[in-house]
Length: 242
Image (cartoon, rainbow, N blue to C red; front, side, top):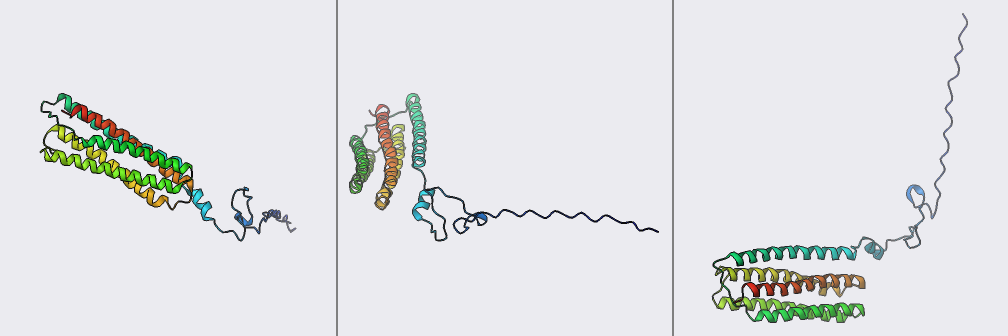
């Protein structure tokens, strides 16, 4: 019986050789190669060491983020006092037991102190523009003293009402006086704490742009608190003053 000859099995084609990745700068890139870097970027050679300034600049928070945070804080505080204004006016118009009180004269001195502190903040910013770090620190310290003076004046005003027998629960007028002035004082204390931090840390900042960002962001908040106080004083004068 004749044998049947089977065809030989197909031979698989030999795999094509992969083109080796170009070896640039000793092959320190991904997969042995190296990607070309822009002229202003770091050179990732075999002796490359990370630059702390480059890393901090790359991951630093932009100035716009700080301003956005300050504006968000300002609008939040504005919403709070708008609500308090609405409640005060409604209570004042429809109340039958409203008792007017005399505003302590120290409040008008406080207003002048706060307005002067806004001027010292602007002088601090002007000192930064002329690269006078010491001048900026002096004006910020002056702002801090004025802010503490304002808070001290608020305590004197409360002490004066207390000596007249006017407490938080004495009548609606005294209640809103303590509430509004305390709410403003707490937010102003927050600004004082931020200012203290800027004075202590800002002297060690070598980057002028970071100092300008810190002082500029604080200035927005401080000017807002000054303008808010002028509005609140006018509101208290119209509703609570005898």
